[in-house]
Image (cartoon, rainbow, N blue to C red; front, side, top):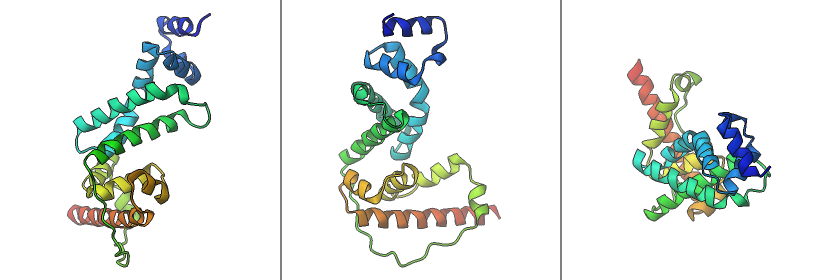
Length: 196
């Protein structure tokens, strides 16, 4: 049986959740609209969260998400089934988000003041913040801090990789991260004082 017919039969029987990742990818490679819709539905929520971390607002995040999926569908034939498919797609979405930011001609200033120690926080301060509150604090960071923090702490990029992606020095990435962490810790301390 032809793969597209096989996928169609599974969907007709209302068992799209029975599709394996391999079948879903192959359906998308064959430009099967149903497979593309299922892939979008499965991952759009996760990747919208990624886009919101880089965007200035929800509309910009939606644009990033849409462009990210267009790029995923256009390049899905290049996925080699080596490593995580979700990780492969996430890299594409992050790169699309970074391209949006580069269009704004962001400038990162080199920060050399790494001497000041960040305020110390106990685990209690972090334990009482929800995901939405933490995301809100991260989004309040200056743009350079926010981007480097997201790329390093959340996405797991090295400072050298961040430097290549953003066309800055690795040392600039490191210093932006130090400043971002200090600012976040201060924001959390301020929240703690308000709560007391």
